[in-house]
Image 1 (cartoon, helix red, strand yellow):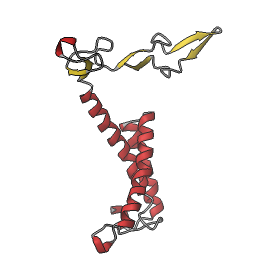
Image 2: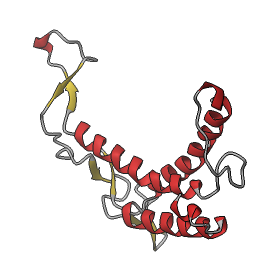
Image 3: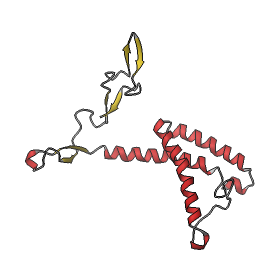
Image 4: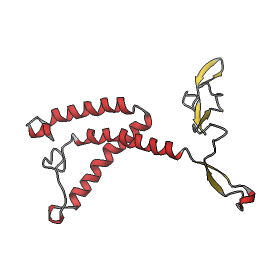
Length: 166
């Protein structure tokens, strides 16, 4: 917005925003799942905006960009802005997951009237992972690699990390 209002060329704005998105992603997330989230946000956000801008015209109180840019709907620099929204979404999801991870589902006891398939919520600590939600990989015994034919091979189950989800 402000760079455009000062007359800076859109290609320069796109370059600056792309560099900011890259550096922000590397600093705030830098994970494979984060890259997938950022890419989905960078593609999905503008596609949703195209739909909203197309459907919600000015006559019914819709919105539009003051600079419809290269696409006719918005300037291309909005894509890296959405990309950098990925770490925010990913870190928010991780925070929610961590809070939800404090609650453990365990089979209900027979004396509580529940059958074998009934689960109850408890604040008990998981005996397998101590609520970390990660346990040593059974394929490589938590080492991250295994030996085969005299060679050390990165474990494909845990991707060499030595841990899998509990």
